[in-house]
Picture 1 (cartoon, helix red, strand yellow):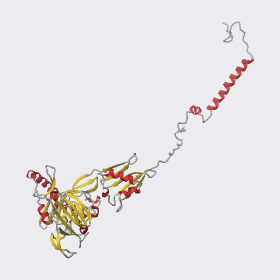
Picture 2 (cartoon, one colour):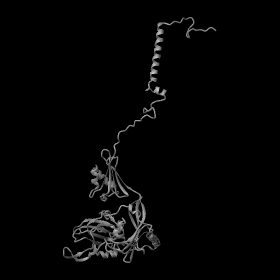
Picture 3 (cartoon, one colour):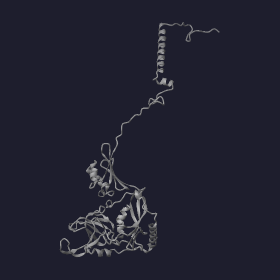
Picture 4 (spheres, one colour):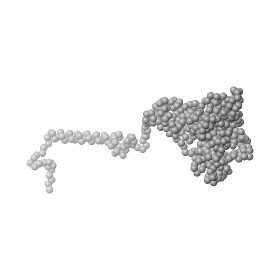
Length: 460
C-alpha cells in the first residue's frame, strides 16, 4: 500500500502553505519552551532549592534541620516574673496589725480581716517567736500571710481576687496518739525531773490532780517516787505535745496517792483514786502551791497600816510567778487593776459563789475577761502588786454577796463524789489495764532525742 504523507489537517482540494506569520509563531513557542527548560534546570541544580533537596532525598523540616547531626538552636523565652516570699518571727510586743500593715495592708484591710478571723484565731494569742511567711506578687502587692501557730497548726490569710476581701483558714496536721510512761525517784523536785525527760508540760496536770492531797512546793522531797501514764501527740517521728494524763501514782512518806482517768457510760470524764472516789469536789482545796499561810481570815493588824482591821481573805505566801488556778468552773467577770488589791481576777461560779485572786504579778494569756474557765485552769501568777509587803496570793470567797472563810469554804464545798455503783465494774477493769500499762517497761517515751525540748517559759 502506498503511504500518504499529506498533513494531518489537510483538506482535499486545498493547498498547504507556510507564511511569515506562521514562522513567527513557531519561533515564539520554541523560545518559551527553551526559557522554561533553562529555569527548571537552574532551580533543580541549586543546593538551596527544596526540589533539588527532594531529588537528593534531603529536605529542611520546620526548624530548618536536614540531618540528625545538625546543631539545634535552643531558644530562650522571656523570663517569668516570680512572687516574693518574706519570712520572719514575731517579735516581743509585735502585733498582727503591725506585721500586716508593714507589708502593704491598709487599716481598712485589717478591719475586714478582723471579721474573718473571729472564731478562727484570736489576735491576743500571737506569741513572740512564732514563725510567719508573707507572699507578694512581682509588683510587691500583698498576696498571703501564713502563721505557724504550733507544730501542728498553721493559720493562712489570703487576699481574694475580689477587691477588699480575704480568705482565712487553718491548716491542721493529723497526728497520732501514743501512750507513754515515765517513772522514777525524785532527787530534787518533780518539775526538774520532768524537764530532764523533756515533758515539763505534765507538771500542771499532776499538780491539779493531786492538789487536794499534795502541795508540790512543800511536800515533794528527794526520795519521792512517781509513775505516770499519759498520751502524746506525734506527727511521723516528730513529737508535738503531751496530752491527757491517763494514770498517775506518787509515793510519798509511805503513802500512795493515785489518779486514774475514767469515762462513764454517759460520756462524763473525771479522775478517781483506786477506790473510785473523785479527786475533785466543787472547789479545789487550794488555789496555788504555797509555802505557808502568812495571814488568815478575820481581824488582824495590817502589816503596812499597823492598824487592826478585818481581812476578808487568806494570804498564801508563794514565790513570785507561781501559777494560780481557778478553784472551780466559772466565768471571769473581772480582770484588771483594782487599787490596793493590785492585779485581780474575779470568777463567778454556780450556786451564788464568787472567788477573787489579788496581788497577781500578771494574768494568764488564755484566760481573758469574759472567758469561761475550768477547775484547775491557770488564770494568773503570784505577785506583789497593789498594797503588799511581798509575793503572795490574797484569795477570797464570796457567797451571795457575803465574804466567807476561804479555808472553811473550800473544805465544805470540796466533798468528793464516787463512781456510780453500776459503773464500778467498768472502772475496776479500766484500773487493771492502767496498772498493767504502768508496770509495762516497754511502754516508754518514744524517741526523746528527736523531740523539741519544752521549757517552763514557753508554756506560760
